[in-house]
Length: 275
Picture 1 (tube, rainbow, N blue to C red):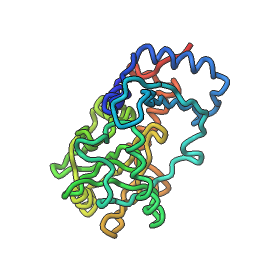
Picture 2: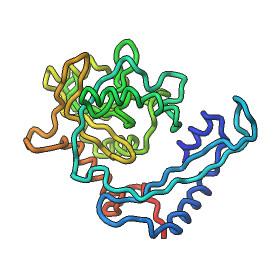
Picture 3: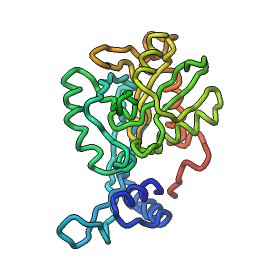
Picture 4: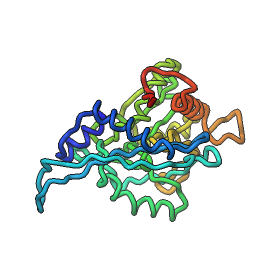
């Protein structure tokens, strides 16, 4: 709710009462409980949405808005299990920029990405890896947050992702992964800017362990290849299993979050129970 209000504030839409809205969501789920599909991987997807209803024709801040929820049954994101994706690293088109709306959930964030995504698909790649700046900083992948797991140049195992600098969407799944990995305490967890030069060097020096995207629908999406400046860089999956479709950490994060979502594992206060 806090992140939704942050988006509303940036769009100059009136903010709303988060706890009261959560109670409304509970009642909505009860009302439409017959729409909840059964089976592993199936879910009822809730998409809160806000639009301006300010009675004014022109460009101005909204003094009133309508908050509503689009609710829909959905099937498994991976109906046949994990399928690792290939990325086209794009340093020409820009998804977000400092001072913009990259940290918000607004339609404008996605409209400008459609054509580059189609062009990447025509080249044979699954998603766009969005780069930024003269140093080609890694930002996001498709509509997901990007994570890289490697042995850093100091010789430490490290999970790194771009920082929340105003251009990165502060996804709930992103935050969940950072929290889990910090609680495990098995390797360094870092939020910082890092570049394609660092990533390709890690590949060349066999220090890259795995990469994955993270988002609401996918949870985690394994990455097996990144094209950068016309060269394909292979991303490791699980070296102990030639048939693996995900790295060990990616698989572990997937298993843990899914278990929490389905109530097989209790963790902090992440789950909201609807009686």
